[in-house]
Amino acid sequence: MTIDKQVHPRQPLLPNTAHSCLGILGGGQLGRMFAHAAQAIGYKVAVLEPEAGCPAAQVAEHHVQANYDDEAGMSVLHTLASRVTTEFENVPADSLNYFARDGFVAPAGACVSIAQDRLAEKHFFTRCALNNGVYPAPHWGIATPKDVKSAPDDLLPGILKTVRMGYDGKGQVRVRTREELVQAFASMNGQHCVLEKMLPLAYEVSVLVARGVDGQAVVYPIAENVHRDGILFTTLAPSPNVSPEIAKKAQSAALDIIAELGYVGVLCIEFFILEDGTLAVNEMAPRPHNSGHYTIDACVTSQFEQQVRALAQLPLGDVRQHSAAAMLNILGDVWFEIEASTGKELMREPGWDQIMAIPGAHLHLYGKSEARRARKMGHITFVAGTMSEAQTALAKACAILGIASPEQA
Image (cartoon, rainbow, N blue to C red):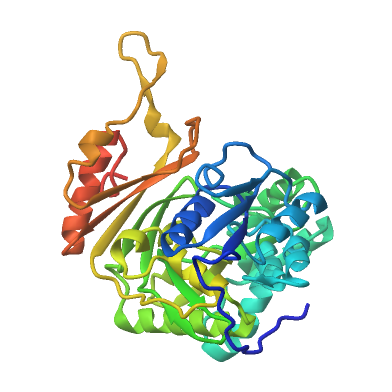
């Protein structure tokens, strides 16, 4: 796979002109927030997405309702926008390559292809580690029952993950023994997998980094993440636990990875901080990321504006964080409650008025028509002068919404 790592001169697409329309593959909440950021600068937005009434299409000027690999739909999008990005990593890389033939795409299909394949991603991280010193967890590719038998013993206990299409904890099974590994692989229905050694994890951090077509790169402060049931629960930024030395090493590794990819746009890289204080790289998302939502309210330049700047080939923005931030993911679960007298499950609208009475609270709902359990419906960012104040506000919101706070988990 060829990755273009050359540095090219910027050719800006200026806003507020007849041709200043940006295209995006995917109509979810990330596309919606990208559209908001683009429109604030003066761009129009065209979305390619098969779902009618999706979050991004509600706010974009153009909605091309078609599959991501539909040639007719792609042709329409291409007539509307000569610059195209994606809001999620599972868009076909060939579709990105289609738009790159006589337009500009960020990130490139070759970069997205690596992030779509967990094994290719780990091989790439291992190559990068020869320079930056930050390795992924020990791992083993499994495509056949024979690979299960030959997996090294020291990778157990571990996590068996599908190589492709896994997100928010999907496509993952924890295995303690060889017998459990055999059963778990059989349950994957022939999908190629990777066995990853379970490491003594202290906590997880993510690093947002952005790079322009001219090679300019910027990196945001370290964010610390907590997950529940495989889905991001809270993000604290800047991380209250990471040491300056580890923060610098993670940011340096992220800058090395994005340069080695020849990547253009916003890239999120997740790292594990182990109990002994060492650092391991976990995975990357070739797009703005849930853990970077705090940048909308707490940084000079949000991750979404940064993606707009990179795609339009404008200078990248200032990544300074002006307020401590605690971000809470809002899942569809908070719309449901159990009626005490009958035991029946009822739906009700959460107390958003109470949430917005909390000082520093910024509510972001994604415009999804139906609340479902485990479905991401929005997020709240609490900004404050100190992290302690932001965390106190987050705990108040959890109490209002009936969510166990991080301290209660």
